[in-house]
Image (cartoon, rainbow, N blue to C red; front, side, top):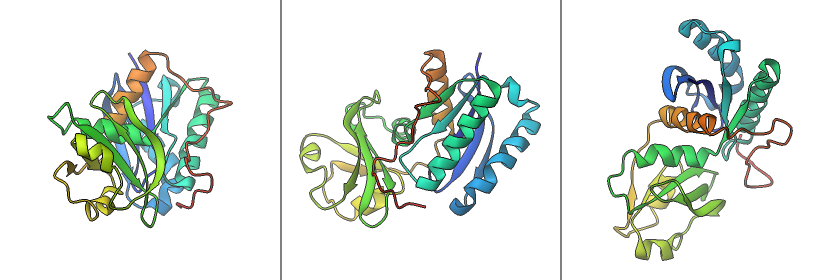
Amino acid sequence: MSLILNIDTAQENAFVAIAKDGICIGSKTNLHQKEHASFLHPAIEELLNTTGLKMTDIDAFAVTKGPGSYTGIRVGLSSAKGFCYATKKPLIALNSLEVLASEMRHQIANQQALICPMIDARRMEVFTAVYNANLTEVMSPCALVLDAHAFETMLEKNIIYFSGNGAEKFKSLTHTDHAQFIETANWIHSMCQLSHIQFVQNCFDDLVVSDPLYIKEHQTLQ
C-alpha cells in the first residue's frame, strides 16, 4: 500500500492531493497562480485533517518538477524536499509534460496516434514534447517557438493530439486534419497514478541532486 502526497504548483492551477495506491482520496485546488505559495501549506494541513492522516503517515512525496512557472516549480520542489527531509520519506519528481500526456491518453481511442502536451511559455513559445500511447518519448521535452511549420514532418505521417494551455496557439497556425485538439480539465488523477507507479518501482529522486526541469536557462514565467 502507498499513501502519497502529490504537489503541483508549476502550472496556472495548483493542487495538492493524497492518493492511496494511486487513487485520489482527497485534493485541494488553487486557481490563482500568484497565490500558489500561500496556498500550499494551509491546503496540505487542511487535507490531512480532512482525511484523518498525519504527515508521518505519508509514504512518499511527489511533485511536478517542471517545466512550467519558474516560481511555481521552486515552491513545489522546495516544499516537497523539506517534507522528505523532515519525515525521512522518499521524493518522487515528475515531468509536468508527461503527467499531462498521461491525462491526454485516457481521452484518446486511437492507440497509433501521438500525444503532444503543450505548456504556455509566453508569446508564441511553448514547453512541449511528443509521446506515443505508452508514454515513450518520440520528441524530448523542449522549449519551442511555434510557427506554421512546427511538427510538419511528424504530422505528414501521424495523427497528433495536442492539449494544454499552450495548444491554442498552435491551433491557430495549423490546418491539417492530422492535428487534433482536446481539452484536459486537470491532471490530479493522472499524477496520482504515475506517482504510485514510481513508488512501486522504487523510482525515487536523490534529495541532494534533484533539480527543477526548467528547460530554458532563463525562465521568465512567474
